[in-house]
Amino acid sequence: MASMPRWRSALSKALSLPENQGQNLYQLATTDSGATAHARTLVHRDILQPAGFPQLPIILTTTDIRTPKVVQLRAHPQAELCWWMAGSSDQFRLLGPVRIVSSPHADPQHAPSLWTSSLAFDKMDAQRFDWEKQRLEVFDNMSAHMKASWCRPPPGSVMESYEDAKKWPQTVPKLGEAETEEDKRNQEQALRNFCTCARGPRGRRLGAARGEAQPED
Image (cartoon, rainbow, N blue to C red; front, top):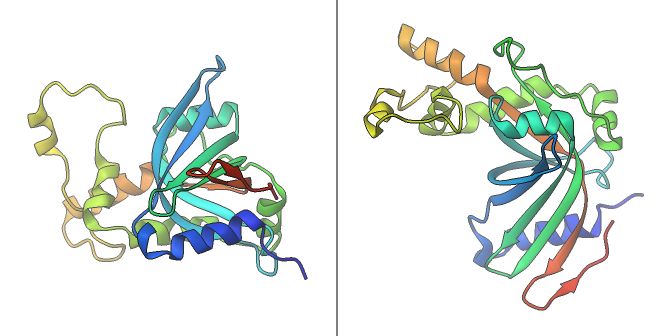
């Protein structure tokens, strides 16, 4: 029976350590059409896998469909993730294709979901995994304040004044709990901009403090 990759086992162990509590941020590097690299910090959301295939883990995070990284990933779907665990001095580098799952009601000026193929993604599709249901569940599990962040102007927009931020929605209720018309509009807007990013990577663990690279699987 197939087992999970060594880097996945090491990652699970590192995440379980008390000294790594809250270490849920990592950097994702992409390249644009001019081959210029860009990196940003993302929040880890979950680790998925096709049923019966622990050797095919999928790292899940989220982003805004309006961000430059989405444009870059459409041009070059391969991206590298770097996850530094400060408590245990572990570093994980995960390279692989990225799949973007956007809202079926996203703004027409933004392209639809990026349906990248890989062994892990293809297995999930063959098992009829519901990517849209997963997107909605991830959205609903976030705090009301975090949901509201998808109602803001596109990332990278120029602010004329800090006073502008006072006009932005501060909270967005859970699905099915919007009571006012304003809450409903804000929830719909946030969902149009919210998308999940899944990557089925190959990876390796680097003992950063010791400089010891573990083999890739």
